[in-house]
Length: 108
Image (cartoon, rainbow, N blue to C red; front, side, top):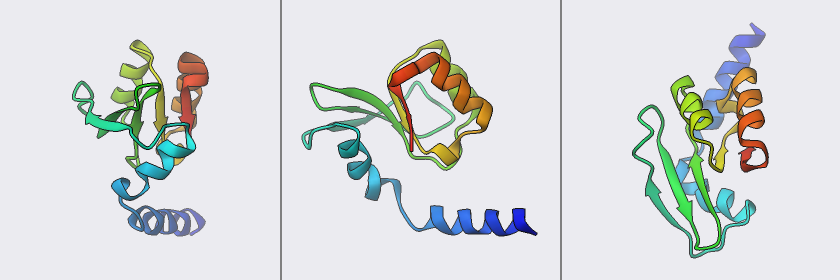
């Protein structure tokens, strides 16, 4: 029953916001300037990932509620700065990304 309760509350929480509504806050809190640009990172097929760039800082941004294992493999194979929702990751995926991306991995 507890697992069902938690799953229901998580569904409610993820339904409360749209990614476009919080992307500004996420990027600003992670050091991006207001003049950032976003473009689709089309090389990722399993999640909706954007490439953020403000001229000084660059990062990939994913606000999906679940990160596909294929996306994790692709990030490990081609490391680059990456920001995502912490709840979108399994413990193993979080550990693997932290080991391969080091300080360029941010899960919030």
